Length: 268
Image 1 (tube, rainbow, N blue to C red):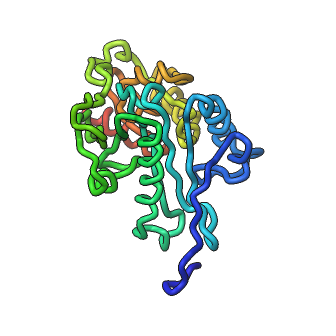
Image 2: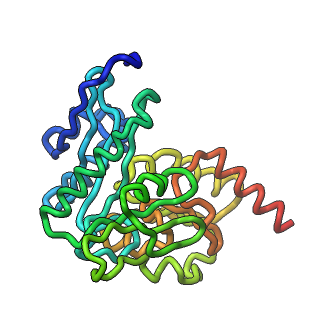
Image 3: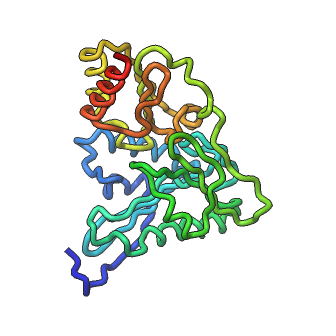
């Protein structure tokens, strides 16, 4: 553990298809045992030539302590129209609590801002939410971002524009449409962009089918188009029950069961 008087040696490195398995991502480190990591690496390898980048925050001591993932807005894995913007998928710092609140997230963000300027993007965009599982908006607001669009229940699309004359990005219209085509049964949507979307899905589908007698369907969001047409602003995951989104991000089987029981109780 780093003592208060010690200043860790911090490096921000580029993850590439050649070295990503050495460092892992999002806390996943074992390629042989973790299918989540293998799928993430495959996805990363596919989109890396198209502009996807992951910068990792490496501390000595401390090891892997954070990351920022971003890609051109045209291929963003969120349901957004962000052409000509650099889109931030996720940013995280602090597997160990002593690395939180030290400005490292802003360091990662500044690397991304600098690259956006160097490559002549209109600016940067990111989706945040007040709830769990995504970066809170405060990091971005204090670094000059502004909210330009919102989506239920608590998602916001933030943007840092290099020129006020530039058009604002926006959520895709699909997230405001009625979910009539998902009216019957349970639908789980997931993309390998987020490795957490693999965990618990099989158990959720099995308990939905066998314990609650629900018709189930798993939709694999395999490419940019399918993610950008997701009805959930998170894009990479959602659970829909009879035309209603009941989970906007990956959840445990226990949490799923509690949600279903509450729905059944309300309907009598």
